[in-house]
Structure formats: structure tokens, C-alpha cells
Length: 398
Image 1 (cartoon, rainbow, N blue to C red):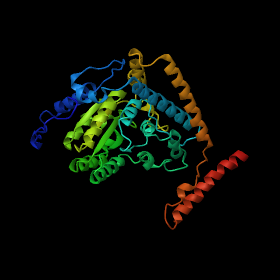
Image 2 (cartoon, rainbow, N blue to C red):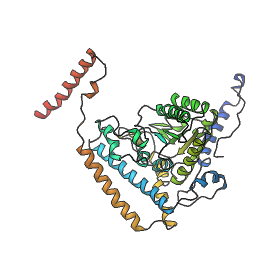
Image 3 (cartoon, rainbow, N blue to C red):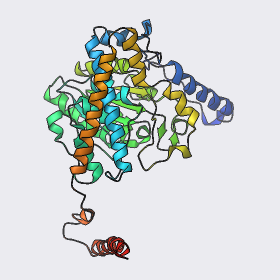
Image 4 (tube, rainbow, N blue to C red):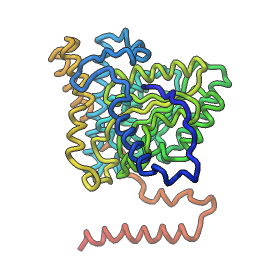
């Protein structure tokens, strides 16, 4: 089953809690593990072979007419997004950025879903949707000013219908729902999509957004990139059932899709957006994928997960998967891949040049506008910070 249609089960009474408690927990964990392997929409296998499954027909029809040129476009998007991401990570390591949140491994989920949106749809991202930003036409270099500390965003959200990055975990789900309610009141046929991770699914804001969206039949799609880790917290410590099944408790459909399959992500997101535009309300998409790198550049994933886990997911690499399909179907030749490699290197060079040309951040800006009329404690903290900065200059002069 791919869409949550399970009937409600009767609640166990308090007096029967002791009976079968251990068995119930074991069964739930087993079901969750089984669901991660079987209850997902997949149109391309990790080996790059097309899946012909009648159970996926409802979604497959949304990519039935996809052309070789469009498939090459999806591949190009993923390759260039990964190249940009790698360059941003390197720039942070070189001290050019204060922080970076990598999307490595999540390219298919972002490019597939991003290319499913229409120009008049509105997108609410977190801080990791670099691939979606690419699909919405945001210059990738505009994403870097905030991570360098020289601006609060870097682009006009209304120019691309792509909201500024949201750092507060889960709050954008509420923003998206409210915006979608407004879209419905305006009588527009556009849709809204909100991105968040598996960690954010534990936030109250997300549950509140689900409830409001369901009650008001808002044209919003909730796109959860389940990359298995909420920083260092695994899925097992967040949920006992697959995340997509949470939708049924709020009264709208939920679908789990192979998040490393760009074609499936494109199809399922088109399906969800179309039903939203038709006035059929919200849907939840759980893109089951993996965060190949660290949560951010301040994180060390080797402290909480094993190398063999990453190796297993590397075999499902989203870019390699689509390349295998392009090659086996004769949709791309070696010349295409060579040209793309050249374009990729040019993008990396441009990103380096733009970032290094950015001004250094104002280290004292954090103390400005904390209070409208100033504050003695802020003045004291500013003086302490100034003394701390000065100590480095003194040390260098010794």
C-alpha cells in the first residue's frame, strides 16, 4: 500500500496495558522496518531499470510522457546541484562561510519535487533546499550570503515564489499552510509546497500545520525529506510508524516515495500538487532518502553512525541511478556527460569567485537592533566581545 487508507483501530484500555505490551512494541518496530523497504513508490531501481508495477500506475501516469531531453535535464540539475554543494562545503572548510548545510544524497528528492512545481506555485524551504532553489531559478551564489553572514537571505522571495530559508525547525509548515489558505480564498489554482525533514516532523508546528491544512482544505503539499537522521537522532527514536502514515490521523493522504529516485519524486509530487490545485486539499509526501554527509559542517556524523550504513546508501546514489538509466536507454552519450563535467567545473569556479568577492561580515552587527533603545547588558557584552577580538591582534603582534 502506498497511500494511507488504513482504518482506525480501537484504543486499548488502560487496564489491558500490561497484556502484550512487549509484543506490541516489537510488532510496531517490525512494521516500521518493513514499511521502509516495501511501502514506497519507485519508478527506477538503484540499478537504473524502469519499474513496471500496476500499484504505481496512479503516479506513473504523471511521467508517462517524459522525454529524453527532460530526463537529461533532471540529471543535469542533480549533477550541478551536487557540484555547487561540494564547493560550498569546501569554502566553509576554508573559512569563507560560517556554516553550511549539505544536501549530499538528497538531490533526487529535491530536483524531482522542485521540477514538479509550476511557476505560479509557492515554495517554503528549510535551509537545505539548494536543489529546489536551483529549480526555482534562484542563482546558487545568492544562497551563500546568509551563510557568510553578510545578509539575511540574498534573494527576493516574490521574484521566484521561493521563500527565504527558514532556520527555525518546522515553522515554515505553518507559514505554507497560511499562505495556501490565502491562495484558496483568492480563488487561484496554484498550489503551495512546504519542505521539512524527519526531525521537524516531531515539532508541534508541523502537527498544527497538518491540522489547519486538513480542516481548511488548503492547497498545500507537505514534502518531508526523511534522511534518517535528525542531526544525531535516528528515526527509531522519533517514530514507531513510517512518517507518511501520520497524514491519515489528520484526514488526508500520505505517500512514501523512494527519495533517491528522481523520476518517482517528480511523479508523486506532480500528483500531489495537481490534486491540491483541484481543491482536494493537502497531501504528505515522505521522500525516503539518506543524508550522505554531516548535518551541517559543525557536525561529525562518525560519532553516531557507522560507515557501512553510508556504504549501503551509496549503492543507491540518485545520480548514478539516473545515469545508468540514461545510458541503458541510449538517452545520453559520452559527449553529454563530458560537456556536463565542463559546465560543472565552471559553476564551481564561479561560486568560488563570487564568495571570495563578498565583503567580510560585520562581527558587531549581532549587537545592533537587539533593543530599540539600547540596553546596558548588550553594551557590556559588546565591550567584552571587542576586547576578545582585540586579543587576537595583540597576539599576532607579539
